Length: 142
Picture 1 (cartoon, rainbow, N blue to C red):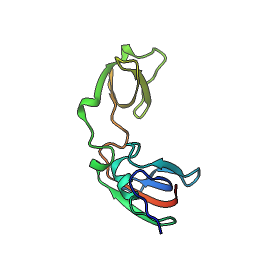
Picture 2: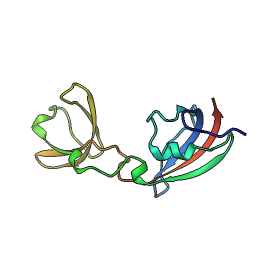
Picture 3: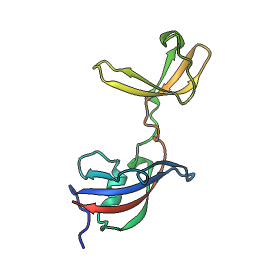
Picture 4: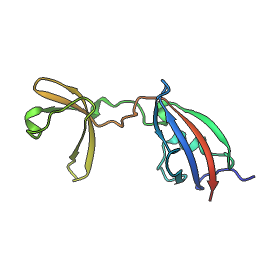
C-alpha cells in the first residue's frame, strides 16, 4: 500500500480542535482539502502528520505551538487612536479589521482591546500561541 511522502498531492478530511476541545475548522461538511506537500502551504506539524499515512487511514495528531502558528508576538500588537478610525465604526473586541502596509498589501488585524481613546489591534494569526489537535482521514494520494 502506498504511503504519503514529500511532494505528494493528497486529499484529506480534517477537524482542527483547540486544547479545550473546541472545533475551530473542519472539512467534513465540505470538499476535502487537496494539497501538495512541501510547498509551505500547511503548518509544519500538519504536514508532518500526513507523512507515511495510507489511503483511508485515520489518525489524531497533536501539534505544539512551535509547529503550528507560533507564539504570540508582542511586536504585532499595535495601539491605534480612535480618531484614526472611520467615524461610523464602533470597535468591539474580536472585530476583524484590514489595513494596507507600506507596500500596499492588505494586512488583517483583530481588535484585542478597546480603551477610552484608542484600541489595541493584533496582527498575530488568531491561533498563535495555541497547541492544536487534528483528526485526519487520508482519502487519496495523487
